[in-house]
Structure formats: structure tokens, C-alpha cells
Image 1 (cartoon, rainbow, N blue to C red):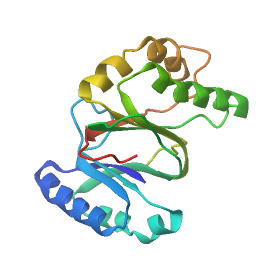
Image 2: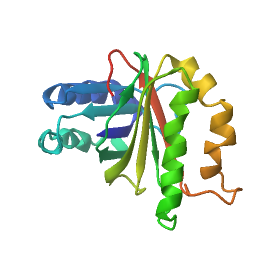
Image 3: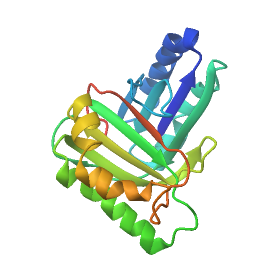
Image 4: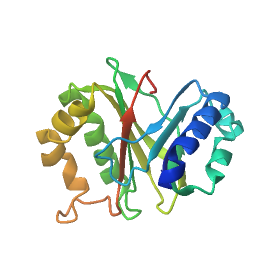
Length: 200
């Protein structure tokens, strides 16, 4: 599960500590709960990602109860399944939440997913990645996909990844409202944070 959490500024440190404690009790096999880094877009103030062995363990974790704190003003997120691909260790975790239009036909969606999934072949700063379809969306947008990566560092995300020709010449067409290929109609949530240990 991934949650992007907006918190009133005076309470951020307290809420961060509470969420880290909830994550530690959750039974997750891997987790990160950290402040988002500058450059996140619609990414919240705190990024929470928990990885469980199975759906029942996630359901039993009761982490979402910790998100009822009145200092939390908004939560975007998703619960989903998937298998990560790893080539090395990263120091930055990034999650992209997006919604593909329900009008897109299945063949087009499959092509979109193939093009996203090919990016790690061209961007060596991606240490691990996973593309997942959403089982449950949280927030005001009906998220359909989560695209996650671990990057070697922040520069590896902001430079070689976001500025790579494959990104802006191939993948961006699915997001650009000025192209006929656009299928991602709503805003996206692009959120990233420091990572101490692998999470994918």
C-alpha cells in the first residue's frame, strides 16, 4: 500500500512519528515512512509505503486508522499487488499515482503499460521498479496504476529519468493533453523520499 499524506505544518513531526510507529506495528515485510522531498508534485508531505506478504496481512494491519488524525488534511493512495524487478540498491523511493481514462481500450492500456515497463532498460539510475494496477484507490481520484521505482539518488530521478528521451519522446505522449494518444486525463501524484533500505 502507498499513501501520500498532507499534514498541517505544525503537526508534521508528530504525525510522522505516529505513522512510523504504526508502520512498525503493521507486520509489513518492508516499509518506508518519510517526509517527501522537494520536487514532489501532488505528493503530500509524508510518503508511506508498506509491503506485505499477502492481502490479508495488509487488511489486518490497521494502518489506515492512524490516518484519522485531525492534523491530516488529505490522503491520496492505493492498495495493489505486484512483483518488483531489482538490479541494485537505491537511496530514493518514488511513487507515481495515475488514472487511465475508462474510455481507453484494453489494447491501448496494454501498450501504455509496456512502454512504462521498458523505461528501466534505458535508465540505469533505476535500481528497482514495479508497475501495478490498483485494487483500491484512496482519495478524490480513482487511481488505476502505481508506477514505483527506487533510484540511485535524487539526481538519478530528476535528471537521467525525467529528462531521458524515452521519457519525453515516447512515454509523455500518454500524459500530454495536446496529443491524440493521451489516456491519463487527471493530475498525477509524483512523490519521492529518502530511502534507507530497499522497499520494493
